[in-house]
Amino acid sequence: MLNKEDLLRMTITLKPLGDRVVVEPIKEDVSAGGIALPETAKDEPQRGFVLATGPGLRDRNGQHIVMDVVVGDKVLFARYGGSSLKHEGKDLLILREDEVLAIIEN
Image (cartoon, rainbow, N blue to C red):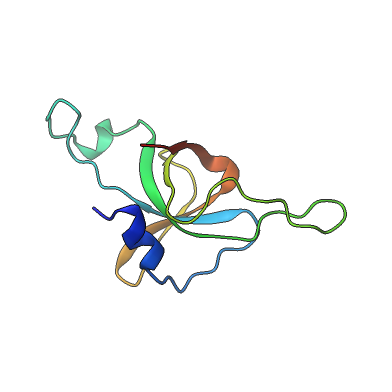
């Protein structure tokens, strides 16, 4: 698993627009208790690392509204949110900022 410093050093060739973020999901195939989870049992929110962010939405005056998430943040998002894609051999998601449920701080 990548740490925040590794993520900040990575280059990504996707530049999201507006309030979108590119997230690399963390693969979690085992529960907290060590039980292997089938794909159908994984309905809880997912975790991932933010690889890129857009500039944010614009207000009425045309100024960008600052995004709450930044590159390197570990986030929690809804399982079925966003659009999935494969880019440079990685499974990624593009989400709107409002589809991010929380920033995980540790």
